[in-house]
Image (cartoon, rainbow, N blue to C red; front, side, top):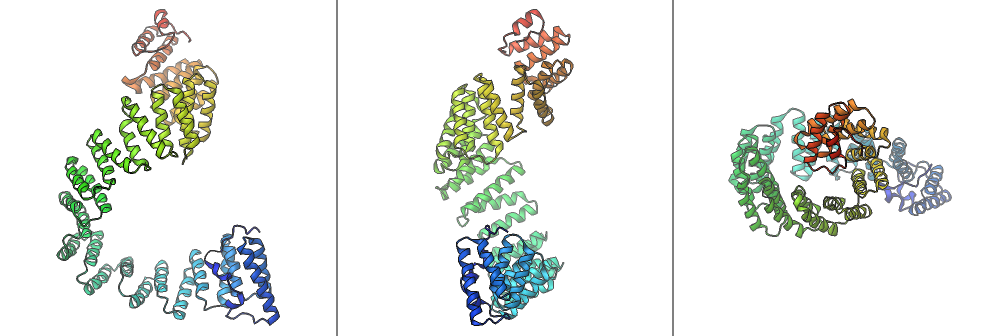
Length: 576
């Protein structure tokens, strides 16, 4: 057996002293010679474990056990070995023997209780805790442990009794009170549950926290009237208490009074007592309520200005304000806010990503995309998204070699959290090499992409289409393209690719069906390439007049086909 992965864990302290010191229970009484022999081997076991020689340590411990099979320390160590090897039942046997021979050892009992709990031996855990409480009545934390086990075992009355005893030692605490409340609820004794909280309020009449707790619990129980009573009592103590404002927001949302909820949120956000983190959370809720009630989100803008005045150096406010301005379609204002955030947080990708969200859809903003991604790469060189979008911008600028360099740098420097992202990089490198007329290199990279993600639909589509253009491996191309149309049966690009592969295979009737579907789903956005394909399939299936009509449409869209004019003139399909 290999014990090299053994970690001593919670009982590492057991091997710091001779085992004979710890074994004070019902074990064997060794003569002096045997005791010295035992201690020698035990020390050797300790040293071996300290040096990471776990197999040797285990063998020595077994030898110690052969000398004295009642020594609790050795038994605990052997149990720990088996536990670390996930042989829990073996470990349990050793821990039980250790406790048998040293029954008053608190730590041994707690270790046994822990493993028994892990193995769902609830009755054994209860027995251990009850024994320990009799032996160590000052260990008040045991009452809580015992209450939890009783609760798990369905003995709710006994769980409450344990908490009552604990409360005598420690006094009132939120944890005890809430656990008793939970247990009474489980027993379907709601009134008794609320009486538990009320008893704490009676002892602490000026403590706003308990009144708010009672209100919140009534609100959770859908007793909104009683909840409001306690919130009003809390208001008499401190009307500006931040927790009260939060509770009132929840109350108004629960009672579907969105207007009042919005007013409470406004009050909270401008409050000087509220922590900025809480205010940001409330701002998010405020915006959500405005949208739900279909109010103009611009009314939130003054609250952000108030936040800027109160917290001028907290750029997380800028980030949220940028998001809100985006909802208002103020892209310029949003970009300014994200730039402020990014300047203050250059190693946080969120700011760059939000700026890209604004810049990417604008084909005239490619230089801005490059500016953003360059800064992202400089400050976060391991983030793959910035290489990806910079490469995409260079590609759209038709600077193919520069795009290729960016993607190769990304593969070398970025940390990929998912093989799917890396697959996209290889897919882009494949596309670029196709445009550079390096088709063999392109196909090699498509293979790498599909190895990482066999369901990469854009790669499957492009790879299969470029194979069909070269009229090679058409069966493979048809299989890859088939995956794309099964995944997205209304995608016009994928339908056109599949139809064209069928065309190259000579299945003209089927090709016509799929390319017509591509035309239908593409509607007014069909490319010159798709229209030319449609004309080609119409020509070979006998509808030459309609074919010429489609070819002319393709010509009007700026097709760069070398044979298109000839097709129109001769009214027949001509291979390129």
